[in-house]
Length: 152
Image (cartoon, rainbow, N blue to C red; front, top):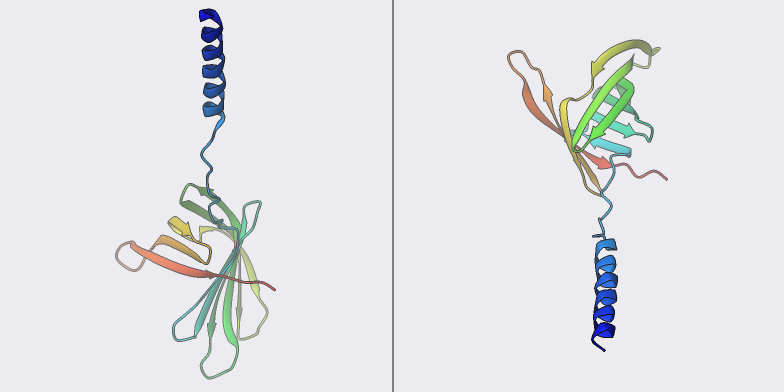
């Protein structure tokens, strides 16, 4: 009888151990940087959008409106690749296209970064990118906040 109890407790212990070790804490899916993001200036004279695609490609469009002439007067499109590691975002531009006053876009190859030393955070509706800009005297930490672009 003692041996049966010992075997029963041993089997029970084994099943409980296997059951506990196979349980994983469920991790909530983190919002992804992939998708379209949009930002408009407070005064309505500028617009920026950025789209991160699966496969590591991005496209960013920066436009300015002319207050005296309706419509977009100048826009710049940056295309390239991106890499995400944790909350770090590395953006490498490969081409830049500039169009002014409805003229022919001028496309040029380039090797620069869109967001220098960037980190990011994503919620369901917001992408926040913190990065360095370089005014005349020293780097300045800058923040860009984009809303999630809803596509029909």
